[in-house]
Amino acid sequence: MHGESFALRFITGRHPSAVWPALVPLRSGLDTLLDPGATRQVSELYTAAGAAHLLAGTTTVGDYLLPYGAEGMTAAREGFERTGIRHAAVLQNWEQITVAQSRAGEPWRYTIALGREDQYTVYSIENLLRAAREHQCGVVAHLGEYRRDLETLRRNFKKPPLAVLREFGGLKPTTQLLHCNHLGATDLTAVCEAGGTITLCATSAAAKRTGYPLLTKLATHDVRLSLGTDWGAPGILPEVKFLRQLPRFAQGVRSFSPMELLRMATINGAYALGCAHQTGSLEVGKKADLVMFSLDDLRLPALSGRSTAGELADALVDHVGEGAITDVMVDGVFRVIDGRPARMDAHELHRIIRSLQENFPASPADVPASGPSEKGAAIVPPGDERYVRGEQDSPVPEHAGPGGPANLEPPAPPPQEERPATLPELSRTVKKVFGEDDY
Image 1 (spheres, rainbow, N blue to C red):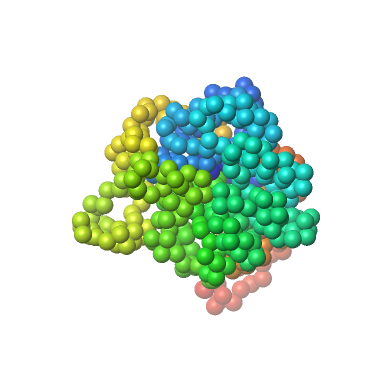
Image 2: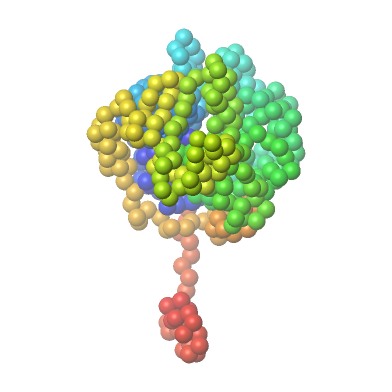
């Protein structure tokens, strides 16, 4: 997840990521959050984001930090800790790594990001992996969200992306592999052999219109999969439901059973975050992380105390919504009771969220609803088979958005279609079927 997306989703939610660089409120919002004097706003933002994830049934998150300095990192951690949600920070640069190393005695989990794949170098990979080994933490490989970046990596190293990581000793069961929308069959085989986990962010891919052809390759590869919210969404259950429905309107996408999806949302997520020995399943000796649902709604399938695990999984995935979450426990402590925060002032949370909406307002006149994509191609809607196969995507340049502002010059406005001064007279049949406006 991206903590800042809880506020910036109001700005980015209507637009594919290709046009994010043109969103002036987004640039302003990122500048505000990265200001060393904005620690109160950052802390409140992460308090609101952590509370929202708890209310949505999440007990553990991995947060892809903005390139905060030491003050921002402290504020983000304090905001999360105020909610009681378990969290691990993904460090983005050497300044953050140095700060984390100086706080080695504190109970704070973190992993190190390898950066954007189109900017990988031998020097950067070797040094980041060395830092991870020295401090006994995992690494995060953000791979294949955008096809263009992955193709750049292939050209630079003359080999498949996962072969690059394996060559440097960076492909291990503990390596977090994020997105991977455009990985090839050779890469998937490498992940399987390494015992790795790929974290899918399918809803984000649909919203950003980056494509997810990976989902058409999974039928022949038994890769361990987990789920991430990525940008904007504060809950995993909508991810589960989206993947459940996707094969019905996207040809070639693998179908997942309800039990498979629940594993992706629980124990597989724990594997991805490197904490499967602590949480993710109900076993003796593990942390007591529990999410409880009310199943007595008359609109739900009738269940009994004798219902099988399969029947419960079917009901949860196909019928139960986030509104049915009643209680959430993290490490034996109730953090949500009867659908409300147990240890936080609900009025204060509402104040924080109202403040976020006021500080990061979305303007309806930001940019056109659809913007340019790579090589000037039109953006293809999620239902289009070319989109699912990844034949078109709309990459976001230079970390505009989740990774920080850079190279944020607005794209040239799309050319306006010339319309004739007068429309030709339509036949009566055409008018009856379509109407003049549609013509």
